[in-house]
Length: 206
Image (cartoon, rainbow, N blue to C red):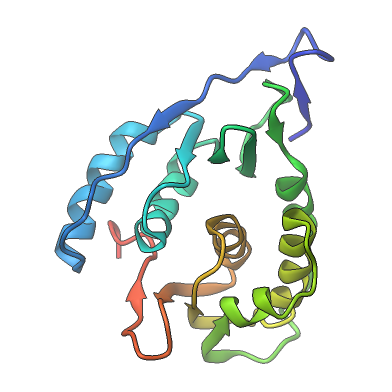
């Protein structure tokens, strides 16, 4: 929905973010993920969420499916100066603090609307996020993220399973995850070519 900040719309609803802490997962298996995803629902249901970029990528991605389903919006705090809106399910116009950067959420909605139904179905799609990101010659982080997303969007197909591979900023991975929702059945994360893919999709109702 239409976005605004505290300075330009005194009639919209003001957003207060719930800063959540994710658990330190010493063991990554389906049962462990299911247990803490259920706990996470209680923290994020109906609340705008702020998540700090201080956790392992695999933990952030495993939490995102829950947050996306149960929260009206989420901000990723990459540092004290940068707070990126990842998605926005708000049904009405809202007021956000001026430091919230909304351009990726707004632009991501446009990418989501791109027609992919004419692309051939594939049982599994693998996308090496790390290779794409590092092959973009750009010093500015936000421009590099945007150019990476454009390249990655070309590789998204209707599928049962999509595997995201490599290391890159959490911001990029979350934006890609958001793009994939509704286009693939399950999302897996693979840290490198030698690692086993790990299912980071929302697991509670599978």
